[in-house]
Image (cartoon, rainbow, N blue to C red; front, side):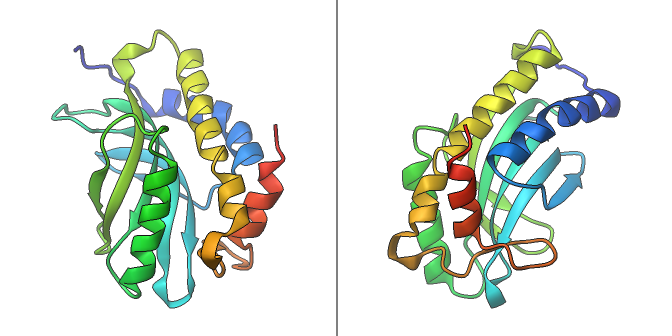
Length: 187
C-alpha cells in the first residue's frame, strides 16, 4: 500500500468541511489534539471525580509503521483505569455492544500521555483508499452517522448509566443524556 502524504492545509480544509456536520449530529468539539500519531478533534465526556470517561474523536491517525498519518476516520475511546473502574467497565461494555456493527477493526487498547488506559473502538480507512477530499469527507459523514445512531440508546439512559456524564468543556453543565436526546432527532 502506498504511503499518502497529507499536509496541515489539506487536513484543515477537511476539518472545515466536516465540522458543521459533526456539530449538527453529535455536538460541539471539546478539544483538538495533534501529534505524530494523530490529528483529531474530539468530543470528550467526564463524570465527577472520575474526570475523563470517554470521547468521540474524528480525524487522521497513524495506525501503522508508516512515518505519516496513514488512516482517517473516527474512534470512541473509553478510559478503563482510574476512579470507579466498575462504572468505567460498564461504559466500555455499553459501547462494545452498541458499536460492534460500526467499528472497522477489532477493539484496540489505547494509552494517553496523562496515564489513561482503555478501549479504542475504531472506524478507520487507509488514506490510500480515497481519490479526493470529497470522498474523505463523505466517509467521515458515514462515521458520524453511525455514531449518531447510538444517541437514542444513550438518551434512554439504561440503568442510569449516563446519569452524571457531562460534556468536557466549560461551562460544564451539558448533560450527555440531554445532548443525546436533543441530537437524536437530527436527520
